[in-house]
Structures are given as C-alpha cells and as structure tokens.
Amino acid sequence: MSEFYRIAKLPPYVFAVINEMKAKLRAQGQDVVDFGMGNPDGETPSIIVDKLVEAARNSKNHRYSMSRGIPHLRQEMVKRYKRNYDVDLDPEKEAIVTIGAKDAIAHLLFAIIAPGDIVVSPNPAYPIHQYGVIMAEGEAHMLPMPDAATFLQGLEDLYNKPAEKKPKVILISFPHNPTTTCVDLPFMKEIVRLAQLHGSYIVHDFAYADLGFDGYKPPSILQVPGAKDIAVEIFSLSKSYNMAGWRVGFCLGNPKMIYALSRIKSYLDYGTFQPIQIASIIALRECEEETIKIRDIYQERRDVLVEGLNAAGWPVTTPQGSMFLWAKIPDRFAPMGSLEFAKLLMEKALVAVSPGIGFGPMGEGHVRFSFIENPHRTRQAIRALKPFLQA
Image (cartoon, rainbow, N blue to C red; front, side):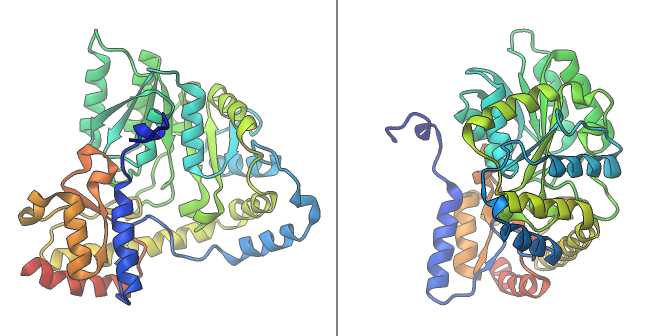
C-alpha cells in the first residue's frame, strides 16, 4: 500500500504486465506482433511537420504560450465543427485547447466535481474515465454496457431510484473504447434529455470522431439542440491526424465547464508548445482529406483482422467504429481470465493484446485488439494464432 493518499486509490496497472512481458520477449529477439496499446503507427502528414519545423525556428514561439490555446487554433477548431456538424461555437467562451484528450478529462473532472459527487459512465471503459473520477474524489458509478440500449436503460433506472443521489456528471464516449459500441443521434438526444431533466452535466469523449466505417459517421453530442446548456465534447488530433505524440486536444461546448477548465489549467500549465499549436492550425485547415485516408487504413486493417480471426476459429463481430476489436475470449480459455489468456497468447503465438480486466471489472472475459499493425503483420499474427486456437 502506498503512503500517498491518491496513489493508494489506484489499482496496479494491468497493462504493465503485458508490456513487461512483450519487452522481455523482444529483448530475446522474438518478433511480437503488437495489437496492445491504441497508439497510431502512421506518419503525421508532412505539411503539418513542415509547419512545426518552420514555427520552431522562430524564437518568438519559444516563450510561454496561452494555457487555453492560441486564438487562431481555437478558431480553426470551431470552424471544423461548423463544417462537419453544423454546430456553432464561440472560440472565446466555448472552446479550449488541452494537452491531449486525457488531460482534458482529468483536469475537467478536478474542476467540476466535489468529493462524493457521482459520475456515471459505461463499463468497461478507458481507465481515465473511472480513475479520473476517483483521483478527483468523486464517486465512480459504473453501468454495464453490453450494448448502448442497456446502458441507456441502466441510466434511466438509476435516475428513477428515489433514494439514490443523482449523478452530477454523465461521462460517455462513442465510438467507445474498448467495446467499439457506436450510437446514433437519437441516442445522444435521449442522453441530453435525461441529463436536462435531472440536472446532470455530460462529458462526451469524442476521441474516435473520424473513425466510423462502412459509411457510418459518428454523431457529435453538440448536434443535439440545447446540448451546449449542459454538455461538453472532447476532441483530439491524435487518431484523426496521426498526431498522438503531439498531445493536442480540445474541450468544446458548455461555457461554464469550459471556464472551470480554463481556471484550473491556468494554475497547472502554460499550454502546449506554441509551434505545435501553429502546426495544428494547418492540420485542421488543410488536412481533412488525410483523416479520410487514415480512416480507410484502419478499415482495411479491421477487415483483415476480423476475417482472419473468424477463419481461425475465433468468432468475432465486425466493429462499426473506433480503432479496436473487442473480442470475447474463446469458451475453452474463459476460465483463466483475460490477463492470463493475454499472457498465454504472447507466450504461445507471440501476439500481444490488452486484457479486458484492465478496462474495469466488466471487461473481464474479453481482450482488445488495436488496429496498429499493417495487413501483412496482421496475417502473420493470424497464422501464429490458428494452430494455438485449434490445438
């Protein structure tokens, strides 16, 4: 047990076990095919990199930047929302630049919840959705999400319990990590209706906004009339533009929450390095076509992986969005649990995946594949998995 109060609340990082095992095997010269972390492997478009280099050579950009982001970057983000979703936003009061989406979620939770406030979210989930609440001393209330309708019904049931304290915040993310659950605009309208009726705020993590497949376009919650009264959306350049390491995100929508985030960030940071912000303007202004190419690459990888696993005897369902495949552990391996199964996959087939238990208690029984290996490497993994699965 840690002697530090907040650290003591955090569980062991399950993914570290897999990462250590992977590193050990690679140090031995083993070729591990890695579907673990959702870490984009593609290059950032060269026009963005060129602008970064140019801006970095200007000494004026070496000084502290603005914590809430430079005005032109906020303006470009707002323009993108108008183009893509027909949503009007005020770049001064309804948009803030963050150091990635995770930074936005963690610091927003610190800003808007008090000890004991309930934050309800689906489970399994991206770890910061649960542990960001715990670190901010809120109460993380997890609802199972085998599908979107079940989560929505669980939320409605929670509101209808007279003795229950009402949630301060609903924290959602669609397309969803890790389950890949996707929703339509009517779902978002119903979430907004419930939140407005019961006095809750909504935080929508929209990290996979541009990764909808087979013609599906993920909706923005800000498309719902009146959503800005109670909701913010968090967008990131990480997946859409292959800019994961650049750490550029945005929080958009409700001006009260934006103001609260800007206040807390003003004490915590001076914003992202200004040349990165300047280069991000070019991403938003000139690289929309690149987001389509990136989406198509993930769709091709999805198709190769899904087809290969099904052919190898591991039945999986084709995801409609995100950069992941959420796979139920084959029945004969289920008793060992997701962590031991993930370790066995690496030992026997040199394939790394993320164990479902790492995404919360309701993730047990599954593993997550990320689309971060090219089709050739994916087929290599399938060839190694087939004899293991059919033994």
